[in-house]
Image 1 (cartoon, rainbow, N blue to C red):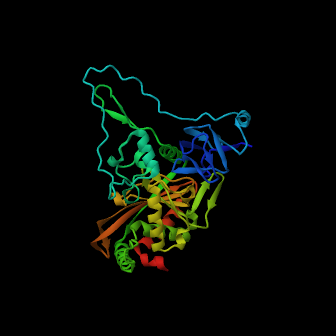
Image 2 (cartoon, one colour):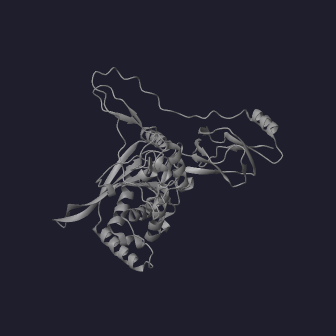
Image 3 (cartoon, rainbow, N blue to C red):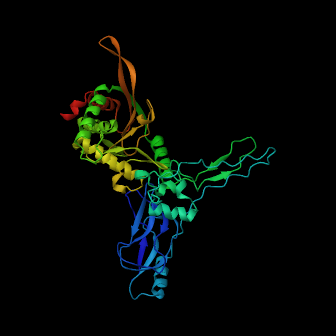
Length: 426
C-alpha cells in the first residue's frame, strides 16, 4: 500500500514546518533511513528520513509551510503502479496547500520631486577562510543554497566551527553574510532608503513568544550588585591549573564567568525550590530537577540550549557542555530536545559591555536572570571606600507564580554563592 510522507512533529510545541528542499526527486528509489528532505523549524534545519523502502512517487509540497502530520509526499512499494498512486491521492484528498507567506507590498511611493536615492548595497565582508589547496570550508547545504542563488561563497564569512560557512550564513541573517533575500526599496522623497528583510521562522517564533510573555505575564524585577573579585581570582587560578593539565595538542577547558553563574543559579534553585517553577494556568509546576537554559545569539535570532540537571555538575563539566552546545547552536545542529524546556533561563550580555538590563521571561518558566558586565566600582567596606569588581544581576519574575519574598530569598542565595565561590564546593 502507498505510504504517506508527512510533516514530522519535531518537538511537542511544533505546529507547522517549512519544506526547505527535497534531496530526492520523484521516481527515486529510497531505503528506510535515507534523507528525503530538509525541514526548517523555528529553531533549526532538520533532516526528514524515509520510514520505509520504496519509490518516491509524488512530492505533494515541493516547498513551503505545511501543518504537522500533513502529507507532503507519497512512497510506493514494490509492485505498486501509478494507478495505486492515483487511488491513494484521491483517498487522502491530495496535498495540503503550502502556506508560503510573503510580506505585504507597501503602498506605492508618492511621486518624487527630488533625485531618487540610490538603493542600499549590502556591506562588503572579509572572505571566508579557505583551506590549503583552495578548498572552501562550507557545509553541503550552504554550497547548494549558494549555487541556487548565484552567491560567491568566497565573499561570505562563516560562523560555523573554524570559520566554516553554514546554511545560516547564506540563507539570511548571519553576521557578515551577504543577504540574498534583502530587497532594496526606493524611499519616498526625503525619507531614508531601506531594505525589507523577510522574517525567518525563528524570528516569527521569537516575536510571537515574547509578545505573549510581556502581554500575559505580569513581570516585576529585582536587582542586586554582586562583588566578584574572589570569583574572578578563583577563575584565573582554576584556568591556569586546567591549562597545565591539558594533554599535548589538546585545547584546555576554560571556565567562563557564565559557567560559574550557571552553577550558582542551579545551587540557589536547590536552596529555594519555590523559584524553580512554571505557570500553567490553574496550577504551578514545581520542578525537582534544575535544568538551566542559557540564551545564545545565533544568526537570525537566539536559542536557549539547556544544561540538564545543572546542580549535579561541576564547573569543568558545565564548561565542556556549554562549549559543545554553543558551537552546535551556531551551526544549527541542535536537536529540539536540547533547547526546548528548561526550568530557569540565564541571559548574559556582560561580554558586550552591558552593565545592567531587564529581560523578558521565557514562558512557561517563572524566572529569568539577566547578567551584566563585571566592572570596577567604588564600594564601602568597614566604613572605607574601596575599589571592587561589581556585577549587576536582575531577576525577571512572573508574579502569577513567584512572589517578591521568594524572589528576594533566591537572589540573596545567588549573591552569597557568587561572592563566596568556595561555597559552591560544599
